[in-house]
Image 1 (cartoon, rainbow, N blue to C red):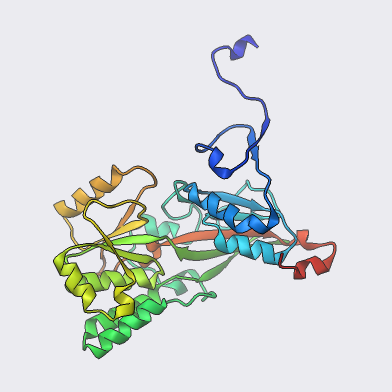
Image 2 (cartoon, rainbow, N blue to C red; image 1 turned 120 degrees about the horizontal axis):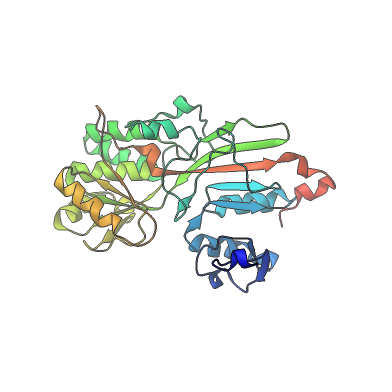
Length: 320
């Protein structure tokens, strides 16, 4: 009609595509893209979705528990809805927020929200009622770092490793309230590659402890001091450190800063100018000078409509 002459309008539309990368970016509007896929290619499909860089919500419709678990474990998405609609997140029930290009901060309405707004330096799992999940609270690399530090007589590093093991939310789970017939669970997962910016020595070792305590991948800038510090570590730990050139800041999930003042401000300015998702910075804070481990993990909520599991109960035992 004439009232729409000055705008651009699209009716509800279905568009079939051949691959996920046919989409150049997010499309907002009454548009649904349809992609057919073979059941035995579900892993590669989820990988293609992850590769887009967006990770806000994902919907799964399936009665097969094995398929659901497989997708949930692989998807890098903030909110996953199983056998229910994908809208209407409720504060405290389905804390809302994504990953990568879909968000970097704490989930709105989640247990970390007020801690982050208040600038809390640390957060112990017990404070939010989290319980240990399937993944260990401290990674194997952190345990090996602590054992090496003990043998080398580095008691401060041993104490910090033990402290970070207790503070880490890695793999922790939290049952969220919800209506009858729905199960809501909050889990914590590594963000990805974290760049350690420290000249070397104890500062770099502590950064490595923080990164490994959260299950993330450690990277550092190639320089003589850092090379010396990493070379002193056991071979399996040294091999777990990725080397970056000073100007190579691509595909980072965050940066640990041992410096402050003008140097830290300059680093944040550079990070803000990078294309793609926002890159968070982490600095030691509080009385103990600890890194904020709770910020170095991604929050993932899974909301399951448990009433949808009716029908043929034997389907629940299938894994493909």
